[in-house]
Amino acid sequence: MIGLEDVAKLAQVSAATASRALTKPELVAEATRERVQHAARTLGYQPNVLARSLRQRGSRTLGLVVTDILNPFHATLAKGVQDVAEAQGYTVLMFNSDEESARERRAFETLRGHLPRGLIVVPTPATHTNLDLLPGLPVIELDRASGRANAHTVLVDNEAGAERAVSHLAAHGHRRIGMIVGRRDISTAIERHEGYRRALADAGIPYRPELVLPGDHREAGGRAAAHALLALPAGERPTALFVGNNEMTVGAVLATRELGLRLPGDLSVVAFDDSRWAQTILPALTVVAQPEYELGALACRTLLARLAGEEVPTAVRLKTTFIERDSVAPPAGQPRPQPHPAGSP
Image 1: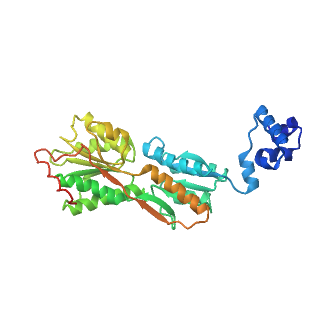
Image 2: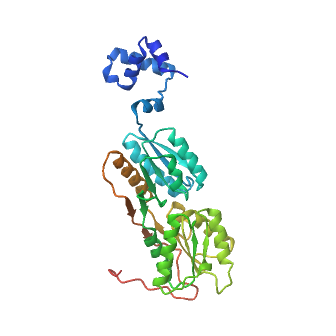
Image 3: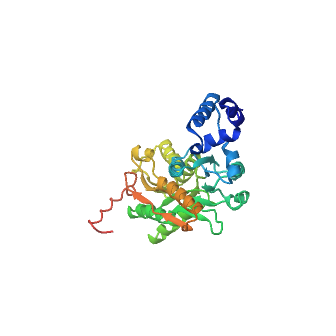
């Protein structure tokens, strides 16, 4: 390892002068500064950022833990966080918990050794206890809420988004509307399920628990749930599906193809989350879109404001956007509903 003493020796200066030339160059004569910087480049010297942070009692590092970096939703969240952080001179250390509480805990243990100024986390079910590893650290919970008292959260209005999706299916005449739901110990799944139930009640449709199956937020889970729902007897199986996230939707669409079903002729589908593939498949999917990038960017701006001592809202919820495309039609044998006149709700 090349150390500061090696740079100082090559530049023929003291270690203190070499340090000033690299960290506060304005305090060193130009000729000396250039000699030290040349020596550092020649030797390939890299400063020990962690050691410097320890000396300065702080760092320019933020932690970010997401639950599934392969999911485009989480990748876009991360980009929003990183863009805002880098614009303010911060480095983001990102970890993927893969929806596993134990991996999240290991991420927190690693972060603790890097002295981050703050943390943004998409929670797992154990976040409220795992955060005991980082006492006193400013934390923003992103996309989901862990249930910690007085936690700062940046979320979307999941209930309203889900209610809009299911109401759209009901307005097209569907009475047997199935749902592929995420894990019931995660706030987004709980809220989207509640929006589903509320829309059914508003439409006068009885809630049938056999039409709601878990998909575990994964493609494989969505596929299995769709197969199970569509294997029900003809008079019992759903004529429409509301799917709780984009990964489960991929699985559900694959299941319909494997069963030889046509969208929307044989089955209507609305998904929570938009994506490029949802826009480009045939038929393009009707979706509840989230402002993913803005969610991540807002979470980072909120964290930086807290670090600056500013007062910020404890809870923020952004609106979703309903995007109607081509994956919804009336059940077979029913006419398509007439559009609302211009200017009507």
